[in-house]
Length: 307
Ligand code: PMP
Image 1 (cartoon, helix red, strand yellow):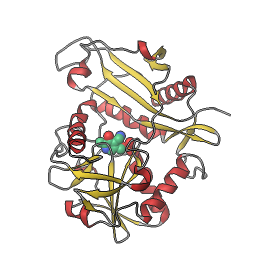
Image 2 (spheres, protein in one colour; image 1 turned 90 degrees about the vertical axis):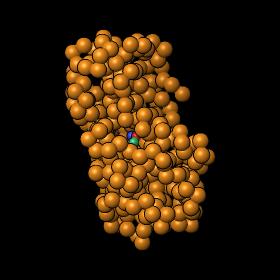
Image 3 (spheres, protein in one colour; image 1 turned 90 degrees about the horizontal axis):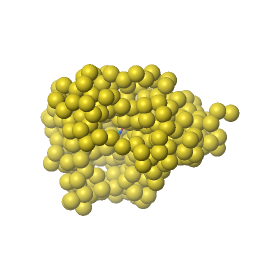
Image 4 (cartoon, protein in one colour; image 1 turned 60 degrees about the horizontal axis):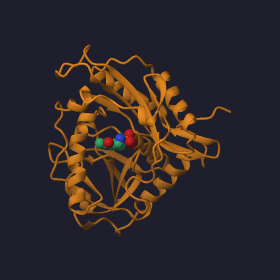
């Protein structure tokens, strides 16, 4: 459900009025950077999960894309909190986006296009379906690979990168799967269309790194710390495709997908074909920390309403 108020270039406008012109540079060339952030309901009101790393990734992305924008990290953070307050959300999904708007149609948009910054919110449940969190999802390895290094900037959450993610996701849906996993340019496992991936074999947790053209997910980072807290060994290394099929457990992480178990890949059952015990422990910890049920020992929550 969309919210009433949208923050746009420092002002609040109505959802219906937050439109852009058809000549907007980003619409033609993907020249935008954006974030997906969640605010969770906690006993002390709504709290944004890991606000700072999201805002930092957004502004770093703008820097790499040479999108000159006037806001500081603190100003974006405050605008996000104010947008949640104005809309009265208990919990929500937050979408900040900075993009090249109208002004010029050539590829070189610097200095010629109007840079816009927008923050909107909406209520959004479980991305991969309500059941997915407990039962796990059926996925495929995509025929589409992730971008090679030094082509797109995989670590930047740029609009243009999501052409690749759409191919992966649409192919999976057409084949009857919930999600697709992309391999990197060398044939090693990279990530889901909109999620990072973790593979557990003999109690060791494997996850690919930046060399496999992944987006360095904020949830991935949180889950890595949870895995360390729980005392499991984690290895960052190239993950061979066959490790997926041999795994005892596989799960996805992402702001939208949260921690979602994978129960089959290419119709091959993973482990017992349902959420595995380590995935469950990680998931329980993730939800307890993000919803303020457990003390915020890592400082991951930013409370929306100041007490
Ligand atoms: N990879 C891709 C391609 C994504 O779109 C996302 C979602 N932002 C992720 C990974 C997970 O990142 P995060 O945990 O920061 O949401």
